[in-house]
Amino acid sequence: MSSSLNNYLFTSESVTEGHPDKMCDQISDSILDAVLMQDPHGRVAVETATKTGMILVFGELTTTAHVDFQKIIRGVVQKIGYTSSDIGFDYKTCSVQSAIEEQSPEIAAATVEKEDTGAGDQGMMFGFACNETSELMPLASILSHKLAFQLAKIRKEDPTLGLRPDGKTQVTIEYENGKPLRAHTIVISSQHSENLTQAELHKILKEKVIDVVAKDWIDENTAYHLNPTGSFIIGGPQGDAGLTGRKIIVDTYGGYARHGGGAFSGKDPSKVDRSGAYMGRYIAKNIVASGLAEKCEVQISYAIGVAEPISVFVDTFGTGKISDEKISKIIPKVFGLKPKEIIENLNLKQPIYQETASYGHFGREHFPWEKLDKLESLQKFL
Image 1 (cartoon, rainbow, N blue to C red):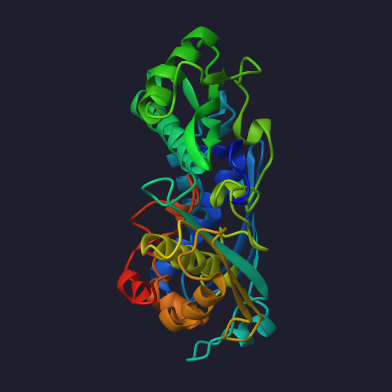
Image 2: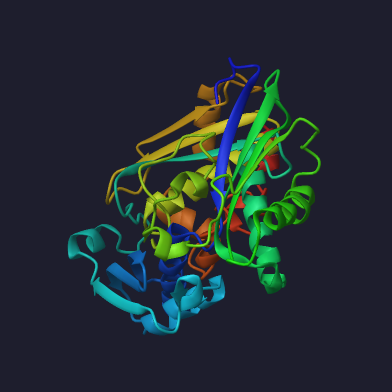
């Protein structure tokens, strides 16, 4: 976000775990986790597609692990809450199909594990952090995720509310002098049962979701659009097709920062689309937390089969305490940027990925790329 803007509105969105695209992301990442639990060196590139009554997983898998696709996939759908044909999708009776092949030997040759393990593909990745929230994330993005998470939480805790798994949230933040001032508009659309009136739904969304999550940012002028089209009974895969990797802006920074060339879910960490983006976030967050900048975006680029990054680019949007050029030269001295170094430093071969596949990959402290362990090393350059 350009530092030349002072007073403006900015909007980000999120979706619940029952959104069909996010359902696919979770299935793809659950397969990745199942592989990594048995075979930390497994290679996974799995996509998922869904529509009414069916799920298709397809892609490449090279591993010694035995993966029970039926059990894993149905378990994910059950956990999300699609448990009956009455709500449009049933984990017990849906059709589950797979079209999985081995990883291309040409790609595999580029990522044979050694000290100079090459990147699993070409590409550029971005990482970002800013100091406008405690999570060092853009406010609209983090609020959208928290609203979506709370919506799912109350649905699971109290089935009598009549909420169903599919849902979307959106937050518009008003900025004054470049700083977040207030929530200008909040939009929530929640799938619900036929018996729930719109008045009852609006009351639930306002009192049990918005007032719980966003109370510090709303005021008497905040606008609300709650299920603005009216009833939302048909949802999930019955209402819309789902596909892995189709919510990449939800996954990252809500459009506040740039996104690289690829999606994350269903890819093992040898794919720099994923591990490089996590590294970018790790670097940017440590730079902001160390005081080198108030806002920082990092780009890293790779060539397939080559270990060292081709380029490292930094933009602090005029907030850096030292020059962006100097920060870009500091980064390789403080952070190991080869794929093998990234995987080892961030401990990326553990089965942690299904949880990343809803409510954003960034801004949640327990993920390893959120750790702040380079502050002292960076502060030496101030």
